[in-house]
Image 1 (cartoon, rainbow, N blue to C red):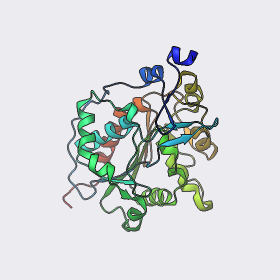
Image 2: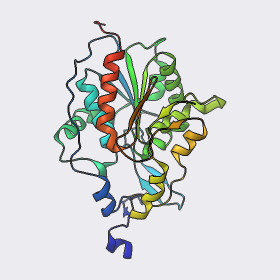
Image 3: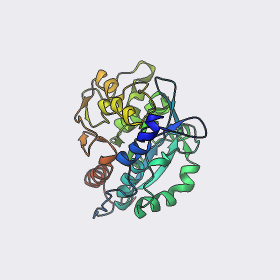
Image 4: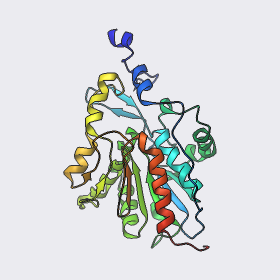
Length: 288
């Protein structure tokens, strides 16, 4: 009762899961974003495709048994895609089994015309994505038409994706063929999939920006999460040899070789700009 009066009680959804409290939404979300369109010399070349790997799972079970209503964060998904589209890239959208993409609808910036326009443009493909298994079967022997693989954040990126062999296959393929990997906030959880089947962690020794465990440990206090995390992402990555460059959930972005990462929703605009400019600088030009 006291938590409800203070606005820090997570909101129970019809399926029994919990979305963030009123106070948490006020502190952590906004109706608009800081998206600033970049002035890009749009890419015209043979590698214009970005594979975007979304989650299809909604509920994360916390240590106390409560379910957090999650998915991919819409700002972390759509703002970088706005930059990449403006820079001349197109999207191939996939989930592990081809089930519809799940977004954290409670974080949708409904007052942001650019983001909502991108969501409307992609709506049909978000509802009917490709199966990642089908994508893996069709991967070329080489980079083919691909410029990058993008894994947006949201706690949902920690559901299923780190344990999916097809995610590991995509990332190893990208790494072998100079295809950039872009991940934001909790999206770097996908990198864990490279350790499946007893393989070495592909990104040992890499520097990367990741959502801080310290923040995930504190957010239950304001009702953002309905309990403590089932496991901590940054600690697991560090345990495998990753080097985390940020300590705050801020706009930190980082590039190490072909890996481009950002720390939090606050980094979505900067990550999109960094990814767009990096791909334009590094990719071959010329008509396909």
